[in-house]
Image: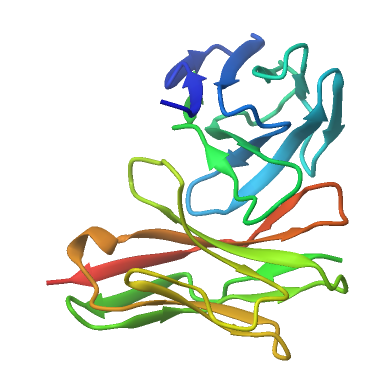
Length: 114
Length: 115
């Protein structure tokens, strides 16, 4: 079945460590997104990409990095520079044109810093 | 600036009753889409319904309908005949086609269905 796969589902990190969250889609979507969700809050955009080898910063990109070497893959690295990384991370994808053009989401990755 | 506002942090509804979740939006663009998502406690985001800015009729999907009032810039979600499984967070979102394919989300409304 087509969809978005995020891994790992749960991740624990010690302070000062970088971690990478995986996001893979087989929907043939051009656009991919990373969102951060804190308890009781909405989704905040970290990075997004519309084409391979190109990506743009969202509202809260500091302390995060991404790559888009393949259309299907958009991994997110949470670096040690991110001061408060404990959160729920959602990866999503969409078509670039056409309606409705909704976001398709993965199941999320919950990162906890110990 | 593009913005989505959801002013109801939490809502309660009796089972089998209807409930309206409010959403207002702000954009100066003429071409945009409005979306509602449901997020159960498991964390997955489930797409519910879509309304395009040029659509003249309100969107409906089963028990979900979108009350679209363009002049007031509101896109309220109506859930009819509430079920216990409707208890979740609900997010309103907007996609403005000329802004680089970004989506703008509200802060969400937590809906609790009471038996």
